[in-house]
Length: 257
Ligand code: GLP
Image (tube, rainbow, N blue to C red):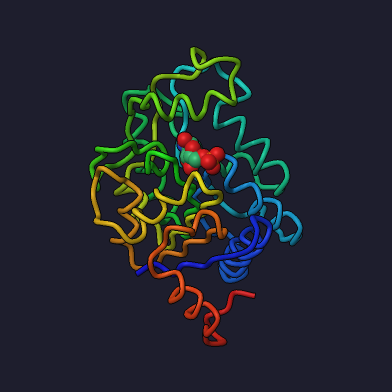
């Protein structure tokens, strides 16, 4: 069962997630982070920046990228990761990879997988969750064993992400994303979810059946998962009282801060 932490605010969630990253980097200065985009991880990056850690040796792999945007497009995940993560956290740009950032698209998935393996694997993967139950851009139906590859976005996800573009027509139809199998290989998964729109999806992901129809449910197959959620996104969790009790009775060595 995932460790589920229910907090009052996104800021508090960011504190907890950033403490997990800080503990990792303290023991391994060149740790490998899995980086998510979207609004959900922003409080984590903010809290991490406030810790003023030396993150210059940290290596990073973004979860996903759109396919078909012109290079340098401000909503490409390369641009988003640079703006929201690399610059504020003073990461070393050459150490941060985004899928398909080098070489032909056809071989980009395999190349990315190899790069992750060469880096020693991802130590801590930050994840958001989409309303369709996607993590990265693994839409419903994605193989639970999938690796980095090109995918077609669902209309729902294109509509959800249209807010970052002038119109839905500008939202790409394709993406390249780490697979669910790639995500399962990371040593620690930290999934964040905020707001009532995520409540039903989060409950299915954490407590429902493991199914490709709800790709985030694959986290139940991972031995080391921390889910950090606000009260609104936690509203449909059946075992919320147990999660609260478990968090409040953590043993000293289990505490990150
Ligand atoms: C996008 C990203 C996901 C992200 C999801 C949720 O589709 N590819 O990695 O988790 O949206 O976004 P948000 O955090 O803005 O709700």
